[in-house]
Figure (tube, rainbow, N blue to C red):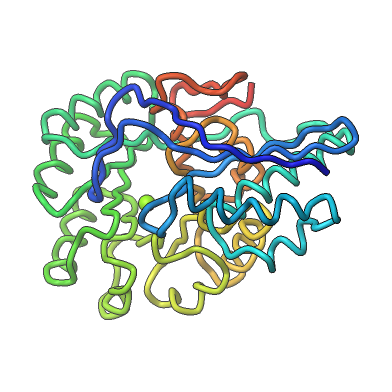
Length: 315
Ligand SMILES: [Mg+2]
């Protein structure tokens, strides 16, 4: 099996602003594997929060890619690389190759629902972005927030989108102090779910009060190993292939989390349509799907997924 990996930069159509900072391009790493005339492709998005960069991911991948010819397969890969972006790209490339080699037809749903993300901006600008999304038919809005103007921003979006379901992602930016009252206020504003309010190391506080709305672990949940720590603290887990290290562990995490009573969210990083296709099979199992990464790109891979009215279409 021949294999190679390389970095790609995809400019965004507008800045993507979350509590952790602002981005103007998506940096991804692509793995291609080829054997018997069949090419499999996988993509990952290295994430600085988890100590990853395109260079570090490529450094991790290179020694393994040269061993693929000697028969290192998907099972062994799970042992050889830790969960994270590097394993994700290779795992997905191998899965893509397996499917094409067997001549498997695409068998998932033709489309999936997705939230539309509203990035951090002034309350007025977020309300404006919400109005535009609602006019386009979006039903679930995901608000990125930091620790400032929380009520103002949520109230402005709520006023602009009275019928929409709202979910919030604080990306670890909030503090335990005041969180109980803030959760109650959000529940009163009809917010349906709150993602990762506290830093992952501050999870214990979440078990000290009854949650008036479901709280979802994102930065705190990478693989099945994390689940025992999350029980009693979170009601939901956000599964992303860049955290699980591929679809192989993502499916195992979905099974185990469901068995333990967690609801599932399916998320993505800033990525191309390749990465969303790789996660597609998990879509029907998730309560919330956050698959709008490619909508932030100025241009996408060919052929791109189509997005419209709060859904993403396979073709
Ligand atoms: Mg998140």
